[in-house]
Image (cartoon, rainbow over all chains, first blue to last red; front, side, top):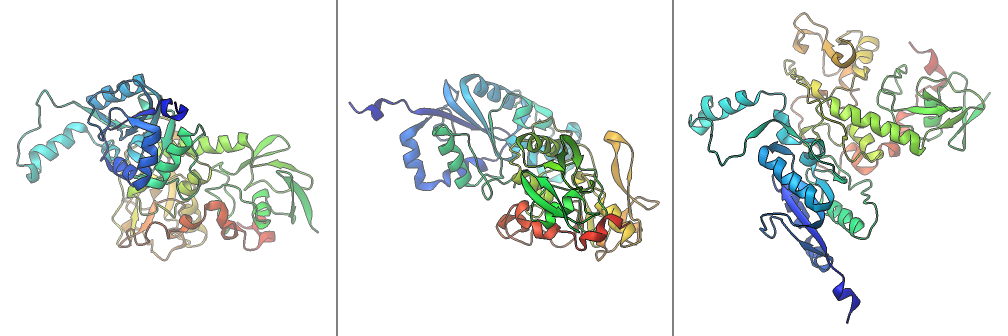
Length: 184
Length: 244
């Protein structure tokens, strides 16, 4: 029996919290390198698999910051089940674009968007019980759970994600260096 | 007469009156800095250029070089401290690089890359700092101010206009505009002023420029800050210490 065939694959879960899925799209920019990657890893909960809840995983990759109660639950689920948790992208690292509402009062924002601004047709602030409650501020994920690695960028380029993942899978400390490390 | 001191095991020559920073840069050795500028009197406030001299920390931009000094700069201990300073700057203001026109040309960002700051680490302040868009040619975005006082120094010493100042103390310290109204439009500030050109971050921005230079061609895209040492070398090394 081939020893390589029985070597268990590294199990990875990914999600987007208060993000735009741009980091997931950038991950797909690794292009055909996804094929050798899939020889080494398998995906648990992820927009790529549509699995709804995270099981025991080696690596969890989180895009986006925390802007509502559901984000907090999902983030804690990932922290509970993943040995290594990675913040990917500007929003997960420092709150990013959604956090630019942080100096404004949440009620004022909701009233302006749903009541006074003509764009949404004065429908009133949505209050369906299925909608997760927004937090007063958007937080980067390291302010909520312990994060093991950070991969900044808006989004990080596919090459940076590839470098990061191949380093991590090979057991090296991920290192990006000039040209791959970007905050924008 | 030229003397030497030791910087990370390398002999660095200096002329009397030069600071450790000036001598190092002249010798082609990069020391991280934000409030230092080759055309202005050293300020010593950002602390990024902190080195250890004979075992004691000191700001290399203000410390006069002396023969026989043992200076440590590029050591894990000092790099960790510099990283922490950058992280504290990053959480104290609102530094959202993706939506900043200075991105790619910003020294705070470039030093973050240089020192591989992967996370702001601390809890963000997310301060409320309204922008001043009153001036016809220039936008002031106070969210990014790191209090280096370069615009203050330039406006006072070169432009002789005293447009900027710092107000408040401690956490409440902030950049203000010297006008009754507090608005930049009510000063004689002009886009051609030296003060409009020295901001190391994205506070003082010319209007109607936007993201003119594509990613990949911006100042720090080609080389990190340490690759631009020649730009920071003092123009007339011997006079720098005397300059007011």
